[in-house]
Length: 241
Image 1: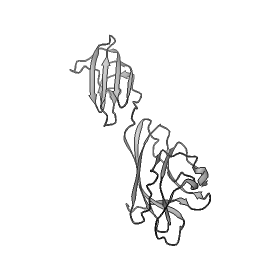
Image 2 (image 1 turned 45 degrees about the vertical axis):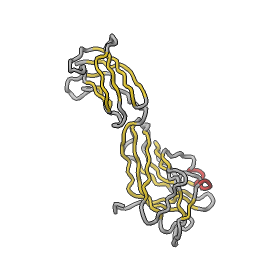
Image 3 (image 1 turned 90 degrees about the vertical axis):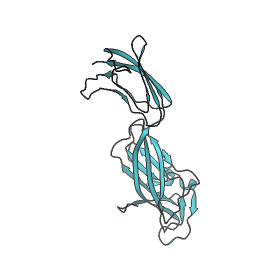
Image 4 (image 1 turned 90 degrees about the horizontal axis):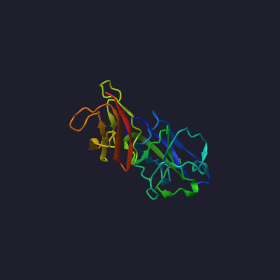
């Protein structure tokens, strides 16, 4: 693909309970809770493989997986991303993209790619002519693995600050929620008497302690309600200018 090298793994071997290969890497940072991540990578079946498989998996874990693995034990792990059954990867001439999404929980620090199905439940597909080498196995080359943040998970609203100090010092200057850039959100701010003093609709929300017409509000405790993204969240925020 990019010419800078690639890896590979055995996706399956048509023998009883074979040793299983997985590709694993430690992430630069743990996944953030409530944030959606998009994973993609490319695979190409080796010329020496007689078979290809489906249901390629990607597992995100808090700890590194340690082997060696046989196919019956690797099936104890449940990958968060797995390609559909019936869609096989048997192309030896081109690179095929594999992709999926995951919602972070805040603990995931390792990414492992491979076949997490026991050998007896692995679907093998004929890949045509094959040369000397891997034979009755499905060996995949892997390249261009990419993991990017791609929004906020549906139904998730993070913990919001309970103090707003819009004094320009760069700390708690705005009551801010970025959203996922797709779902329209609604923010309502009420004073202690239940009077609505600010409202906003948009793909991201922010409030700087003023009304919609720009009038500065007095210090005190205000109530907020956020709706959208499949959920509703309410709470209080203390305003100090």
